[in-house]
Image (cartoon, rainbow, N blue to C red; front, side, top):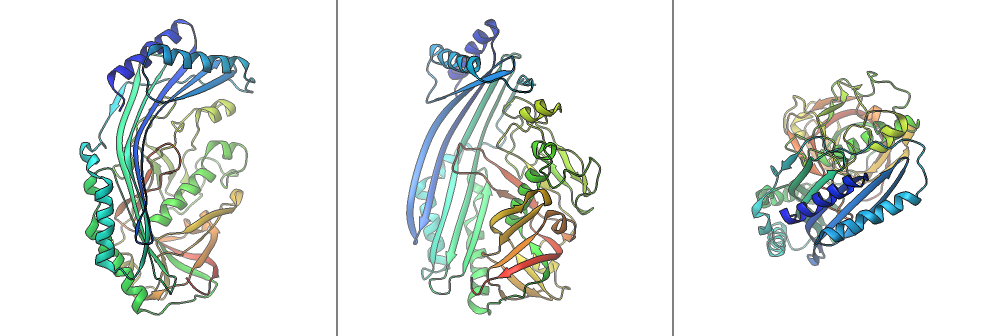
Amino acid sequence: MINSKTKDIILKVRDIAEEKKIVATFSLHYENSHLMRIGNNSVSLSTSEELTRLDINVTIGLKQGSHTEMGEIRSIEQVEKCLNIAYEKAKVSKENDYTPIEDEVEETSEENTQFDKNFEGLSPAFKADSYSKIFNEVGNDYNYSGSWSSGTTEQFIVTTKNNNSAYHIGTDQIFTIVLKHPKKSWEITVSQTGWKKDDFDLDSVIKELKMYVDYYEHLPSNKIEIKDYTVVLGPQALAELIQMAMFTGLWGRRYEEKQAWTSENSIGDKILGENITILDDPLNDNTFKIGFDMSGQKRIMRELVKNGNLSSLMYDSTTAAKFKKKKTGHDSRSYNFVLETGTGVECPIDAVKDYEEVLYIPALHYINLPNISKGIFTGSSRFNALLIRKGEVIGPIFSSRITDTFQNVFGNVEKISKLAVSVNISDTYARRAPTAFSVPNYVVCKGVKITDCAESF
């Protein structure tokens, strides 16, 4: 963990850099991570890593250089050597065509509101035992796979702009299990998000798996027609679509370079339905709350879309400098998108009891973007998808593909659940950067384009 001695070393080298008139940012990242993978009903991987990374960025006029030191910080001499390497890199780098914005920690902060001291209790044995209980309860005749990532992340940032420092410590986890029929090829998945051990609810996982198994085992499978449908999108699908929509439509660089699906719009223009409000809110408890970005800027709640209208764009430091805009606290890999809830009942099936025919698609698989500038996305249902008529589950549907625009899907939402849930969409393949979004547990969208349906699951 990042202890007081390590912080003192970095602070002293920060002072040395300031005395030498070197413009520098020191960012220390620590993680203690564990990942378990399940395959063929047994543990296929159980691995842990404890890593410390010190990133130092130096700016000399229009030039910038950086250096990353892997491993424990032990001495002032070690960190000063890293500073000198970053400085030498900056001296020989090519000049930018813009004036970089100097990093500044806006206020001193110590964040620990989402840190569970008992998180070490989420041991490999606990994980393996939980998976085993699921196999036994739901049925050992199925094939199970999945993953469970958990860990602690710490960040400490100082700059030569002032004497402030920002520190954050937090824990996070994402649990996933996939159940596959050995002959019929259908798959069911359940996932859970949380930052403390008690956020994992084994009974809930088992109950949800059994519910879907009952549907898939005892109701007929359905190959649906290629046409427009009313679709109930579940939380996993919503979280991933919101992420894509925001980064392809409201990310400053894409917008300024006329690549975004909103590039022809101005602030205040209608881009989605009037019942859609999307925030970037680091104070929302369903997200992993980090109150500053990697430039030291304080992250505040920002309305991105308000009642369907474009409210603001997201600018990291480089984009802000290049296009002469104000940076917005988005020099980060951890975001806090919130799709605001509505007034709909909590159960998605009850929500569509008056609809003639709907598709329930809780998650989308292999989402891609055929045309970013037009906001066109595509994704397959694959997991847990159901055909519902008049509030009755008719049966599972074969793998069906949505190819549509963000504007159409989120421009024609008829109902939004009043229940908000947390969805972890963290990248587990790079440095730990906990990211979770808060979304309703469903929205009902009319006129969604189904462009293909397979012959099987």
